Image (cartoon, rainbow, N blue to C red; front, side, top):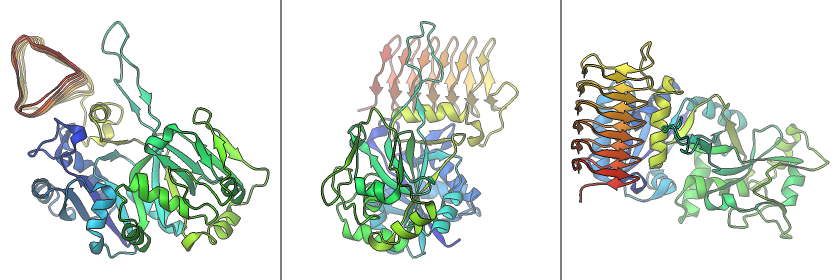
Length: 452
């Protein structure tokens, strides 16, 4: 398959501070004790897509990622790691490497995507439809704790977030309308002539643009060149291509489509239903007639993953916690590990004290030691941690070389490398940056603590 693959691996994203640092860029952030980028690379390898360009923001981050990739994927993948300037955005990063793109079609995947949808399936759909762009759409992931951690039941239950408003044709193959970002909470406006042209449009709010795209190279390069201000594929490049595929509906700005007369069908965002006309064009007529007359003759397609597929992007502190929870829980097939009969992983080199329990949906990595009467539930503990006695860890991620002294309680928190928690300290819903010392007896709730 003549596809060139680009993985946008990011840099040291501020939205993930204090988890990321100059020593641990986003691509190498541990998820279930594996670097985040390994999930995307393993997925591509499974689709037999082995020639990759990995784009990393910042020279230092690129060096770290390059060293890890060359070691972990030696003789498995052919990877060129390319450094670009920071804060270019996804479209800016592609623009910076545009001259390296030479294949007929380009597969672009965000390096923070954790999914079991094979990119090869998206690529095959793209080729079959002769599309300008094909976007992977997945069910919106739920967010929040998997179960209430307190007996009072006051904790918020998991709930899905609305991320996109999507318009699809009757066959659910063609992407006719898409709104992302801040415009999602506004009323949905669709030009009436667009609905008349396609006969029927289904408006969905339960799908997420997963940041995995197949592009026709020449069209992608043209958009990047002509629209120099575009920084985001999801928020700008894709909506532009979707808007411009029907000549009768040129761009009206603000993520809406407005026609020659300015008239549009308005659907309240609180009442998203199917928009339809009495006249329904057959799918074959839609493909051959409407899109063949479209601007530039291009088609925008969607690959919709089944609800059973897992799909989540790690682009916030909350999503970091969610994905770690899922990969050791309901999506454990993504972890690459074999779980025990107790549904956990305890490395043979780890040491457990008397009456210490490691519950289901937990990972304890090599060389870590726990004292007596400790309890670990639904948590990931990294390598070579030293944990005292009477310590409770629930719904948390503890990275490598962490020292946790006697009597500490950690709940819903992320503790980065080389942190020291002195005795009887308490954390709830906190993020602790690398090397930080939490003082004895202190209590912290919903705080982000990092060395100055």
